[in-house]
Each structure stands twice: as structure tokens, then as C-alpha cells.
Image 1 (cartoon, rainbow, N blue to C red):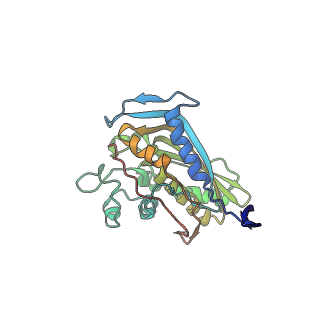
Image 2 (image 1 turned 30 degrees about the vertical axis):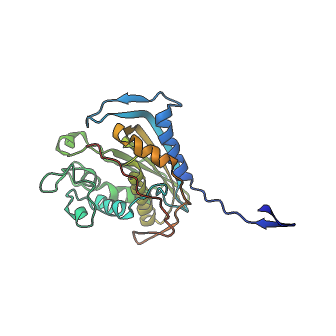
Length: 277
């Protein structure tokens, strides 16, 4: 409550302060890459030829119990991460079904037929092309042996890297059952912090929600580690614009029968930056 003077009267006004802990942590990571507050930031060349500023081993833990990790300081497009997640868990690796739903994020890497090779979804549902379904296995292990330390999904497969249009950037997930709660750790070897990570975080949240629903548990926290966290040189202006932008309250959601519904998503304007390929 805040007391304000109105004429000769004191009037009490209840202020509702909008918090968004996820977005605050995300903005702090972007600032950290430029400032080098813990480990010196490094100007690096990279395979794209664009160049970037990088930081080693950044991370954050977020609670998705009540809010969904989606940025509000710049507009995100939910249909992008929703269609990509469904494509990911389907095991498919051709981008045509994404394109049919208005999702073009993989266009630059696919061949003329739309194929990407044995990338994310393939390794999830048919690891090394030997028929091993990691998603099915982790659901079974959580249900039948919740205290196990082997609730793991690994997308990094050295024997098939040469067949992939792009090796997995997020490559490891591990789940932890705590009574009725389900936690998840995610490891990302390479993190395009401005363009890629916001959508990766939304995909991670959907994965945790999916597994929790299938195992009758409550999705709780995501702990993510970015090993090479970088911002490309041609994205600096857009990053600075975003860092100056206000953000809004956390986005509430429901998740039922594999359907994610965002309730009060209020985003800022679209802030664009070029993709480094």
C-alpha cells in the first residue's frame, strides 16, 4: 500500500508490481556477456564468419510452476516454438511440415527436399537409427523407477554428426523426481543468446511439461547451462535495443492433453536481428 496526498486527505493506493524473474535473469545473462563480470568475455571467430562475443558456462534456474518462460520485452511468436516442439517429439527431420504451419526457422539448413539428416528428433525417437526411443525410455524409467539417476536424453551422437545439417545445440536433458514434482536439467553446447535461446527455453519448458503430464507429476524447475554463450556481432544493436526496452508481467498458462495455452501474454514490439548461418 502507498499513501498519497489528495488535497487535505491521505489516500491509500494498492500498487501491483509486475515481476518477471525469468526475463530479469535472461537480461542479466546478456549484460554479463558484454561486461565479462565473472569470466573475461572473448571476441571470437566462428564457423559462420560473422564473429561473436562469447562467455564460458553461463546458466540459470527458472520455476515454471506458475508462469511460462516467454520474453515480453520483445515479441515472440508462440506458434514457432509450439510447432517446433511437436516436430521434435515426433521424430521427424523434414522441414516441410514446419513450413506448412508458417515456421521457417530451419529453412537455411535444409537441402532442396527439406531434409536435415538425423538431427534432434531422430536422435530422440530413433537414436543412431537403431530403433531406440529415448523419449519412451525416459517416461518408462520415471514411472517405474522414480529415484533413478538415469532419466536421461542425449541428442549428441558422434557417429552420425557428419550426416546432420547442423549438430544439436541443446544435447542433454536429465530429469529429477522430488515427491510429486519433476525437475529438469538441460545442457546446451552452443547458445545464440539473442535469437535462439528464447525459443530454446520455450521448447525446454514444453518438454518438461510434456514429460510431467505423461508421468502424472508436476513440472517444477528447469536448470539450464549454456557452455558457449554468444552474441553475434551483427546482433549488437538489436540486443542493446532490447536491453533498454521495458518488460511486462509473467505469462500465465495452462497445459493439458499436450496443449499449451498462454493466458495473458503481453509482449513489446518486434526486435529483429540477422541470423548467422
